[in-house]
Image 1 (tube, helix red, strand yellow):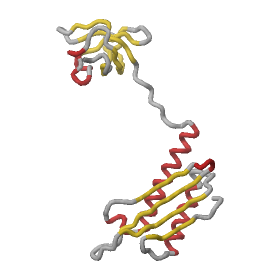
Image 2 (cartoon, one colour):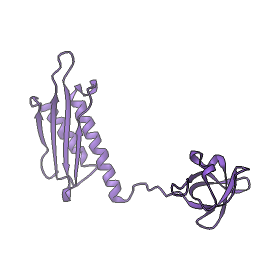
Image 3 (cartoon, one colour):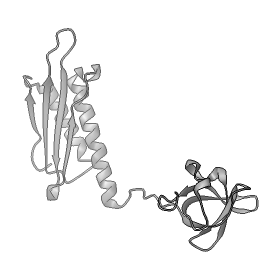
Length: 188
C-alpha cells in the first residue's frame, strides 16, 4: 500500500490499539487480492449506547486504487448481537471488501461468467386441439414443443409466427423444446 492505513474512531469510541492492529492486518491481506491499492481509510463507528446489551458498531472502508478506482464498504448492520463486537464488525467489512476486490479482478481479467442468451425461434406449425406445435430455430431446424413446455400458460395465446425463446433437449423422436418462453410482443 502506498499510503499507510488511516484509522479513525468515531461516535464516542476511544482509540483501541488492539483494534487498530487488527485493521492493519486485515488491510495488509487485501493486497493479496489487489496489488495496486494506493490507500485505505477505515472508520470504526460506535452506534447507540444501550444499557442492557453491548454497543453496536459500524465500519466504513474506502479503498483507493489507481485511476480513482474506489471500493467503498459501509457495514452498518441491523441491531443484532454479532455486531456488538467491533472485531466481528471489522472482520465482516474486510471480508466484503475482499469479495468486491476479487470480483473486480475477475472482471478485469475477463473471467466473469457470461450467460449465453437462450436460442430464439418462431412458431411454424401449431396444433391447439392436440396440444403441441413446432418452431423453427434460427439455424433453420424444426423443433417440437408440447403445450406443457410453454411457460406462463402461454400456449393458448400462441399463433403461427409467434416469436419465442426456448431451451432445447433431445427427445425420443428428435429435438424438442423443454421450455418455451413466448416473446412479450407476440403473446397477446
